[in-house]
Length: 421
Image 1 (tube, rainbow, N blue to C red):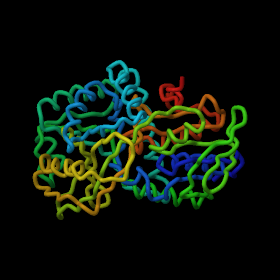
Image 2 (cartoon, one colour):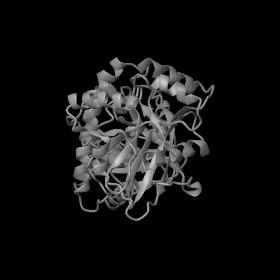
Image 3 (cartoon, helix red, strand yellow):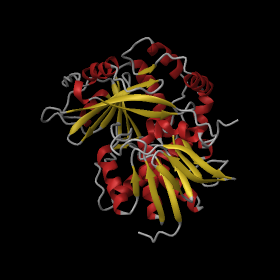
């Protein structure tokens, strides 16, 4: 550990982006304080699918998603749902999303998204090799499984694009997929194995990072919500919260789905919609173990073996945040499972449903970089379904930007103030 001599940084948000930023900053000699508006055990980084996804080089705002989304809109069990609302933020977000849902946008940013994910994946390997870190990291690939000819056609086309981007990808027939999962019967036409992908157990990762940071002298302030910033010229002087004010040499804004509320206090526009997702843990019968994480493509359900169990997660429900659990959304996940795994009889797990909000930008790209208006403010967030995957890359890039070092990935397209006019 280096002697703290660089100065003080206040990190706002204790999700994966905030914790990873603090991890690299404290190792680099900064004194770090973390402000979290909720408690440390309550954010989107805990209950998600735990996937590391260089395969996700296509932004959420991809061609075809709009037509598919309109079809799904009328089915309350569907994987993608926009809760009808006259909320101006949702309407504004939707118009921007439509504007970016085209092939040119996808092609323009595929390389940068791939590189950021691959960089983050390498950083996860490094982190897993450190003392005190064992979060079930397995870099053995993710299976994208499909049952229909239509999905097979789409996914093989996408797999060829992935191969053109240099990713390690195999196209498999149904019997070859079954050979990879000898312990559980599958009913699939085939799958794409993205060998470049991996998975981990999010609660262990988060708890171990928090433990490391506390031992390293990072101070956490829970249930601490930032209400305003005091600025002078091109610098932020302090953050004023419900628990007092915090002065620092630099400020890192993470904040997950609440990022827009934070950046708006600095007159910066980072449009996001909270994409609600649900997950639950399932205890398989003895012997019914899975070797690989998988995505059930038609159902848009993620399947991740973790902690001796299987986590099922899915749905993307866009609309203003609320604390309701919509049973039909979870039922949609439950009903899709036996279509792919006929031996798994999963009941609706009434008392075990977790939900969280993915911070979805309208162009499907993260917000990462310095704010133009302030020399000492950096934003890291808006990763949508890639948030956990991008965590270490966010943190290392935040640290390198503050230190004035060259950064290892091209973040030009991810400017946090790109929607400012």
